Length: 319
Image 1 (cartoon, one colour):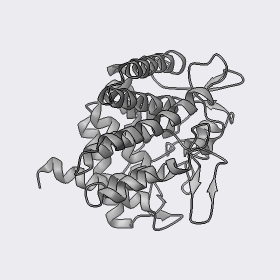
Image 2: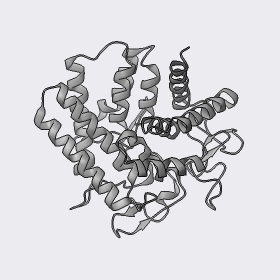
Image 3: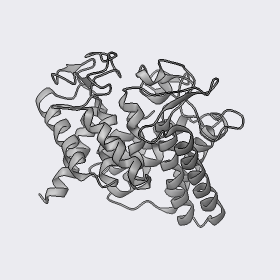
Image 4: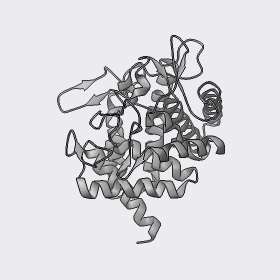
């Protein structure tokens, strides 16, 4: 239930109704706590895990890409569903007294076996906080449009509190760390996941943004962003989230870099991924050092991410 976000964005300009349906599909199966299912297929709906709350980020982009403005009823529906999804993270995924939410398993992050989760399973991470902050900002903007000023104030206050806690508890001065929920112990890794708070873009302090950009550049191979530093002892060429290039991470990083003002690096990330797809197709993921497609060789969110980056590039160069 995050793949659909990228597919919806890629469909927005050409098939807006299908894009809207694609965005809402997992929300049609939202449970009583507000959680989205892990996956929805033709034969089953699985609730064993969740996926990261990138949906506020995706909704903001979807609105900009749709060719017809959303009406009041559609905005209200999106607001109500995003509210329940956000409340799930704030209520069900924060330990008693905690300011920050946690993942119960690496699968909840979408980065199933990333090295960030090697020391512990139940983990507070900065990427989760960052995505939730973006979603809170989106809810605040929607509340303004829907003339719910008290809601807007509450969402903005929660966003500010969450970002302050993220920087206070997880930022060391040059990098983000993760913390075990039970122990509180911090650790850092060579996973690109630790750098995903760059998705906050313009909301990041300059020193944090610059430090993240420098570390992201170290992950950039001739083909794109390796999910584990190739120099790491944990790097695996076909290690799923322990090395290969993935489309969703690429899109989120590229967008965050661009909104934070790191245009050159964002251009480079986009260009390398587009060239990778044009040469090696739309595989689930790719060997970061050779570009070879890995696992499923025809994956929708890879194709969707390529279309998003290609369309944005075309607009930038004025073609």
